[in-house]
Image (cartoon, rainbow, N blue to C red; front, side, top):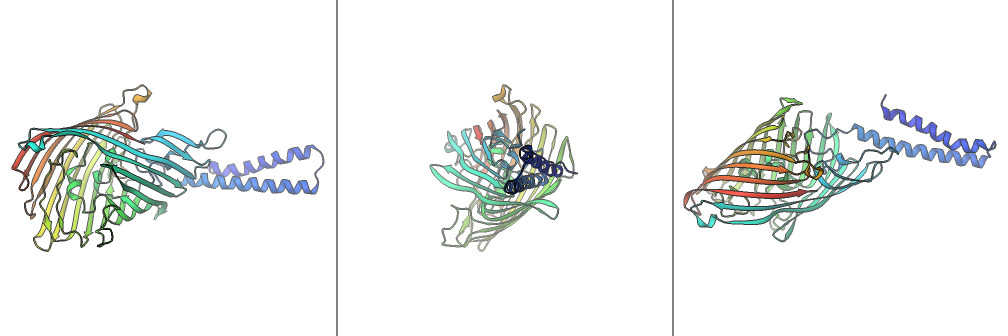
Length: 475
């Protein structure tokens, strides 16, 4: 029998004894006093039953996986961070720092209600040299990502609201309600609102969790017109060694047509499986597909992802404009794994854009990366969700340690030559060093050797190198 199943009768007996002893000590109880005692006992028993129901419900929920996977309720790490009951039988109402977050988590005594502020700050300095185009050899700093929001749970219900500040303007990012429930014998989370798409390994990961300062080529080549966020519905289901997602989403707030035309709508599905999963590591195999019904307001599609770092807008791979697009669809494949302190990931994406005037434009993106946690931590690659989560530091600087160090390398290839007018291609080779000060702050250094061969906008083949330095904080 469960421990919680034995608590109620013991508590009831204790309540009866505690209430009856003072009265019987006097040697006399009248009817009014007896009625008052009975009502008081009934109220206490009802309160105990309610408390135990909450505890049993919490114990029945799947726990957060050891690889740093997404929380049960889908509202950040709030549910997983609920404080444990104290010796007095009540939960602490505020808990600070944990699970990759520096901020406080507020909770009710029984853990049913939780609330936490959420935010991040990423500040970059980048420099580019060696290009034959003087306009590319620039350097500067920028606030790449500054966000502020809040998240919480109400039992199985969750919520997340987040605003991003870019170039002096505020824009809504994640803003959704979630519901966590068993489905077909597995744990599932449903989302309604503006959520982050489940688009491959890098594409389903927060930028602040990536091992590099930018997303890989497969993600940037394969992203749809309405990009990483979308307003709609999403379902994610999790098994012991797999996950599956399905979503329908239109344009995100701020990217919409303001009512002049219909949204572009993305129908996206993704699945991953761990054919090998042990205490030492796991193997990851995954795939995704989307079909995008384009808005009539999309007159052309003209992608030009940055091949190095975000600051330098002159350094990109030009895809060439695809006029009169009618539909957009893409497929992605994933292979990777973790062994102790080592990780490796490969991604490939193939995207096709159909045009009423130039036929079909095909583009390909591929990436191969690997890394080593030099100080022995477990890599942030999650077996549960197939995405990047935060690294949990064994010896934080803030506790007198040296933090955690990671060495990572990546090769990316961008190919826009398949049927697109004036489409170019490019390659980049990245070496990264990450210093995790603790579970919520990091310093990153990236060196990128790159090559572009654009057929429009600059003088053909060009080589160069870029440097990037980032400091970041999450709470």
